[in-house]
Length: 247
Ligand SMILES: [Zn+2]
Image (cartoon, rainbow, N blue to C red; front, side):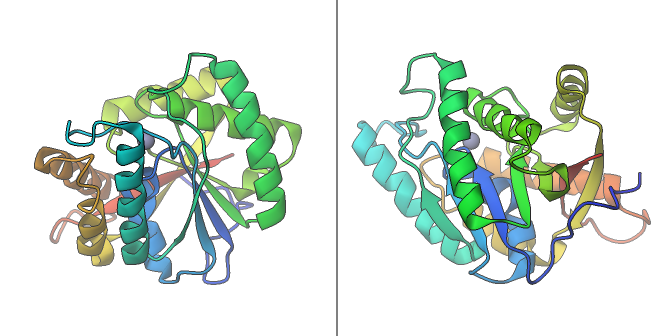
């Protein structure tokens, strides 16, 4: 499928902002794409819901401890991947009451101001695959900015939320985005084979969040995307990330 010809290209001089609901989402979902750009300045990750008590271990039993551990993990991964992380003092869904509509508005106000200041050429936005409420809030807030004209669709790449993305979850999310938001999307495949080992090294930094079976799931999905994007079926497996352009 042809890409949107009017979409702004991602190049060496591009100013890029990644909206990351949590402190690991940018690395998991678009870490390979950022690595390919190979530079620290010019790629800024907004870690939006930075206050969290979510870990896979009961060792980090307080919000302060869990948030601190996750902050440190993000700083290390950002150095490996080469981006500038920023942290927003917002509680993730496990800590806040369920007034999601007001959170969408609050986040929209924050993003409107920050994006006007940073003036990115390209904004990478989570599609909201998998139904995590924080990811959907970020998506809804951003769509509000798109609808009011604060950002243009030519600036936008929607990324697949890893590790929630799999063939069926992405397909059902695309159907929902078409039905509820009227979005027509076309895929953009990014071959990250050459930087994939470094991406997985950075993913492995988030020890408070992942186990080895999660790493395998991420690897398998990157390979599966490679099979969708490959021009030739010959040769060894390649690893890809996939993003979606708004037509
Ligand atoms: Zn997340």
